[in-house]
Image (cartoon, rainbow, N blue to C red; front, top):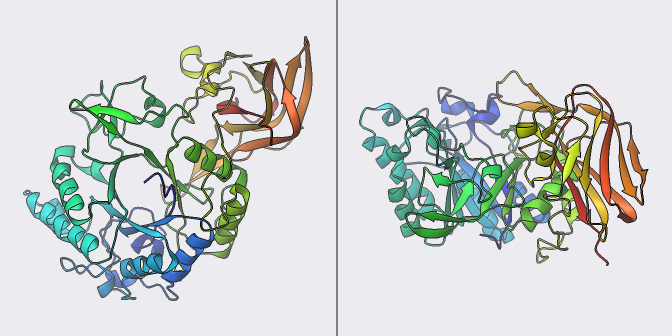
Length: 468
């Protein structure tokens, strides 16, 4: 799994045609009707962008299937375009030399047996669909299960599903979204997924509601720099890497919408790429086709720019063309001009290696400071700012809005502070500052001069200069 490392997620289906993320399975199958469907374009783009595998959403929560399933008529065979998309994508992957993986939602809002008092009928339904997916389309490198939170974990009989997957595809890696939970959680509640990446560092007791599995999933979260991969389950140690799944769009949405959407900043995509690769995990970026059944050109352009930025523009190029090590600021002593709450939002939270705990100020101006090893030089700083979110009318899609508008980076050496960077622009999704020459500092300070609301920082990372 680690060897393939970098995958393209493809969300496409009923939701693409109704401007929704989670539909209820009530729309007629004929609603699905791509007019220029070209699955080869998807896979060819993935190859050209440096991806190693394609992960296709075969059935989302609405129950609509992108293949001709024998056990339901809520599928492409009954739709406005009868192309077997699973076959088209798997064939294209073989043609262009990529591996093929499938996403399958356990939750099914259309299938009547899902709501029956006797759940065994739906489990049989799933067995038949999974058998179709894992026997009719060649080698499947990965299966990504979602939606388990809608029922109690034991209802799914994950050990049986795991055995079925391994019997049909012995080398297929299996993961279940939102499986990890904190050991102290109240088991009478649906708490699976309560353990986030910042709790998966070995400092907290973590258990898994869906097991066995081969890797951890919690979309759209990013692992901590101190990500723990060894978990003791029933007396045995299991190696469970983390697969990151993120959206190419600036907004958090998985399915394409009618209006063209802005992509994430390349700086942020590059930073997330390196965090995933250097942390020995995997990264999957979602690229959704539109109603035509095609990728949009602005999104293709962003993928190619990212490819060139990280240097994977050759098919046999290693994913990590340069070694990226943990930031030298990780775990260093920190302080701030003010803290909203020292326990929950202390200055140290901005240097703990994660993207979910954060420092928060009480005031709209102020500073965040970290002590560094004075013998080390640095060449790059990245800042993930906490941003407010504006919720779209679909109740799911979110747009991030910056708070910080003016700031400096100041270095302390030999008893004096000196500004080494100054900006009067919002930080964007992720602020990356590359210095043309190596910098040195006994202490480094983010000095916030203007913000719309009290500023907050998820992570302030300082990367060591490495001689070329």
